[in-house]
Image (cartoon, rainbow, N blue to C red):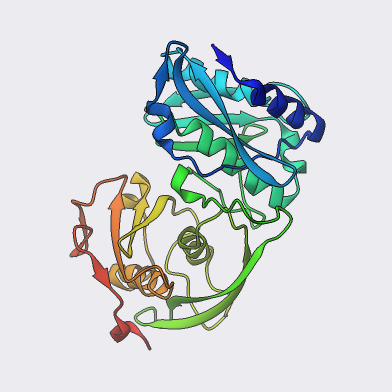
Length: 301
């Protein structure tokens, strides 16, 4: 197994900065399909002097658990102040356990760090999602909400921008009114990293709940979204399997149209389809995940 010259540069860069700030370049996951006499090609994602780069790395390791540990080691995450204490792959998810110093990272750099690790590890055929633990507890956002599983397409490449900048926008979100039978519009100003898709940001904000006391949350805080992606202006929202057991305090269709109407406010989204752990052939309270839904303003108060 061997890396090219940039791997050494990557490892020294990580050790010097300690925070292991990394990001991803423009190459796709197709890199993992390339192979040579040295093994299969993987890309290590990182940033150097505010320019996003990738380092090529070849490996002939077949075992997924061993390969994840190997890639993390090549990224320098087995040493320094922030490191992975353990990792394992099970049922399509790579579980990474970081030491408590992970929590000392600047919030902007932390998102970039997550992006680079997820993009690197998710290249494995056996890995669909990545889950972070910090000091043996699930990684959480500043508001205490669990980050949960992350997919490679949860992060957007934005290689021309300064790392120290966050984007700000105003989202139009829909929550239940106080009768819990209709939806009301909420305008929310959010700051988000450019590495995070707006679709995922919308879902996080909906799950977090409204800031307006005249609105009512449509989901409990423990609802987990595995991934969001947009193809042909259709946003695919993939809920964790536990969503099947979630107890809602609003009618199911009201909750789902809160999501649909909110996502359709984005310029990239015209329709929405839902999945349960990757399966769209399910139905809840007469609401089929097999259907592609459009905005429905009849639900508005």
